[in-house]
Image (cartoon, rainbow, N blue to C red; front, side, top):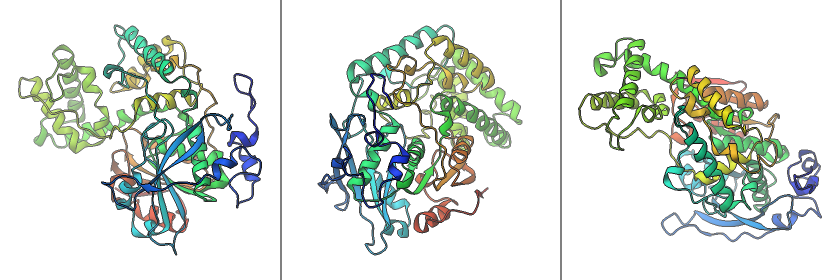
Length: 488
C-alpha cells in the first residue's frame, strides 16, 4: 500500500492485512522480525487506578506506534484498565470494551459494566477498558475550540448557511493548527490496530469484545482486519458500516421521523391526559405550531429560551414517549405565557471529546463532499423528506475542510466472523435499520431486536429480554440459530 507521500506499508508493518495475519501461528502475537513484535513483548505495569475505586480495578499503559506505517518512529500511550475474571478455573479470556463516541473514554467501563453482567460472564472474562487513542488518558488531543464552536449539528437556513460554512472551516483549521501532526492517525482503523497490540501485550491469542454505538463499528472494523484474532463479539446498538460517516448522520433523520410519527399516535391516544390532540394529525399540528411560535417568540426554559430550530434539535427524545410528552406539554404552556419549561430531556450521555470525534468522523473516510453547495442542496432535500431533523443531519460539518480528506479508505466490512448484535426497536441514534445494515455486513452474526425497546443501548441500559442471548453467547460461544425478536 502506498501512502500519499510515497511511503510503502508492508503487509506486516501495517498490522492490517488479514492474509498476512492469518498466516501467523496461533501462539505468537506477531511474526519474528515484525517491527510490531517489540510492542507485543512490553511488560505492563498494573497499578490501582484510583483510590476512590475498588482495589481490584487496575490500570496500565500500552505503548503503540503513532503511525503504523512507521512502527519504529514516534509512539503514544494507550491507557487500559481491567477487572480480573472472578474464577481462574472458568476464565475464558479478555473482554475489551468501548462505550461509543467516537472519542468516548472507556477506561472506567470495567467497573461500570461489572454490575450489568451476570456472575457467569464475570467469572469467565477479564473486563478490559481503554481510552481510544487521542481520548481521555491515551495521549489526548484538543483543538482549543470555544464553547460556541463545539456544537455538532446546525439547522439549515439560507440566511445562516454562510455562517455555518465559516464555522465548519474554523473548526477544521483550528484542529489542524493545534494537532495536525497527530490528527491523520486518529482513525478507527488505527484504534483497531491498537486493540490488537493490547491483545498481544495481554498475552491473548484472541480477544472478545463488547462495543456500544460507535463501538459496534470499531468492533466490526477489528473483526474485518483481524478475523483470526476475533472471539466473541457483542455489538450493542449497531451502526451500519456501509454508511460511514455522513450517511449514518443522515439516516438518523429518517429514524427520527419514524419515532416522531409513533409519538404522535401515542400522545393522541392519551389526549385526555396531555391535551395535545385527539388524533395523530392534531398532535403533529400542535407540535409544528409550537415550533412556528418559537420561531416568532422563543420559548423560555430552564436552559434559556428556545427558538423553533432549538425545539427541533431535541428530536432524539421522541423515542421516549413517556418522557418527552410532558416536556412538549410544558413548552406549549410556556409559549402561552405559563412558567418556563424544563430543560430538554437528556436521553444520550455526552461523554465524547468533540476534538476526537471530528478526527475520527472526518479522518475515517474520503467520501465527505468538499463543495459547501453540496451540503446546502442535501440539507434542503433532506429537510423536505424528513421535516423534523433532515437538515440537522445533512448540513455542513468541519469534515468538508479536513486536511487531508481522509488518510486510508474507509473499511469495507464484509466477513463471516461470529457476533451478536442487540438492538432496541426505537433508538434515536443507531436506528434499527442501521443495525440491520450491520447484520448484512457480518454474515456470521445474529441480530436480537427488542420489540418496543426505547433508547440508545440495550445491555448498557440494564435488564432486557436480550440478556439471555447475550449471556449464553458470552459463556458458551453459541449464537442463536437465527435472528430473534423478543419483548413487545
